[in-house]
Image 1 (tube, rainbow, N blue to C red):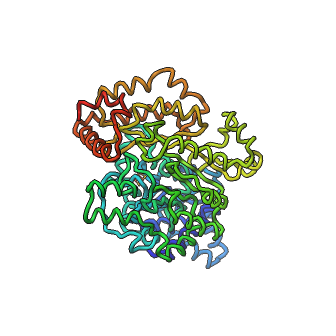
Image 2 (image 1 turned 180 degrees about the vertical axis):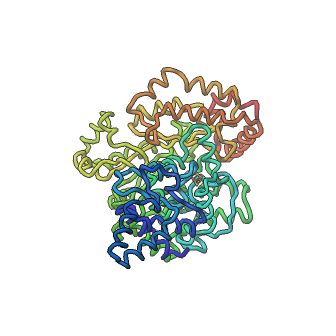
Image 3 (image 1 turned 90 degrees about the vertical axis):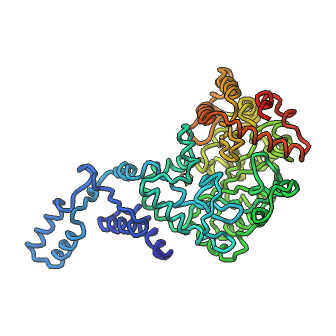
Length: 559
Ligand code: SF4
């Protein structure tokens, strides 16, 4: 379906959502969904009679018809006869229902495993290809031969046939196989990103049906503009880090087409196509959030340009910016850009402390990164006295923290507290092979020194760094440590918050344990992990056993 037609219907149904749907609007909506996605929808077919009337039995209309017959008002008779044809066999909402009365019906019609991402979000990888989200086909080599930023503009990437097909699968109630990461996390009891995003469409079902499913352009962008990065974190790869690429080239680990591809990743290519600038301006009024990942997002020149284009178009204030940064960059120019936006969510990839952090996130240094976290705090608060007061008073401070894109401080509160922009700071802790043994210690240190939310992200890929491959006897010790009453009591402190909203650190630790136990130890993958570690230790002049003596005891027999 062409873009103009989709734009037309999107505006039409969104307006009707606010102003009220007529029976004909519903019929038009069903036709639209059928034509676009090949799916039959009827919200009211099985609805209870206190909410709907059947077209045949609508007493008002019968009375209307009788009146028209009596007065021989021909145009009314024709109108009603026409309606009878269109509405026959259908049910529609009763007039004058209480606000929100239809929400449960719309919610029940959202399929159980539905996901909003393909309808409203677009993830662009450093190689320029687009996916509905960052978890789609995670860890798998996927080639849809659908082009990339090299040969398509961003609207063409959003509309590509394979993404249209995913939408159809979700509307048919299917669980697409490439979404395995979400299904695995949900099976462990964790909240997947699918669920975190408005509970898979069930949180605001009216908007799901009439605004999100019909959205002709994305409202959220997840941009990995290139692999340019200053770190080569152990769990990362040359696909996502130019620094890693250098090491792989030096070690002769990549060649040919793969090497060519990785080098291409290290090049920014979003703005090089001038069409993308115009499309971005067209999208800007509807965009609610832009997530920047990397490489290191704060090192990307195109990041600054994108913010400038949107700010100059006048739409920055409505947009929330979300970052996963390695924390090694503090840049005042970027802070200035943020002032046009006002809502910034900074997630620091700090998943260990001290020398273990330095090892895992080479060549970043824990002390420097922690210093940058403090600098961002300093930047946000214009008034040092207010900031000190807030940091010392946990109860006071937590009024500023919340879930991913919600509940930022209001302009009044910001003014009162001396804040330049509404900023949420959070530790984004990726949990896997290197750090799950130390999670209790890491959490104690981070939550004592910083009054920030934490969020856990289990490693799925590389497979050999996922925590569930670890030896069973090591898992037992980890579980014992994580279940210590003293530790759990500290984590129970109501001022220690865990994202996603509504969760607690203790609940998420339970989920991590479930995830760790989701499969048995895998000696082959442990051996592979140790071999990989040794290779890069030799290159970097580092020593896993010296930095991680406690876990080396469990692992050395596998080498
Ligand atoms: S279910 Fe998960 S992997 Fe699939 S599109 Fe949604 S968020 Fe992405």
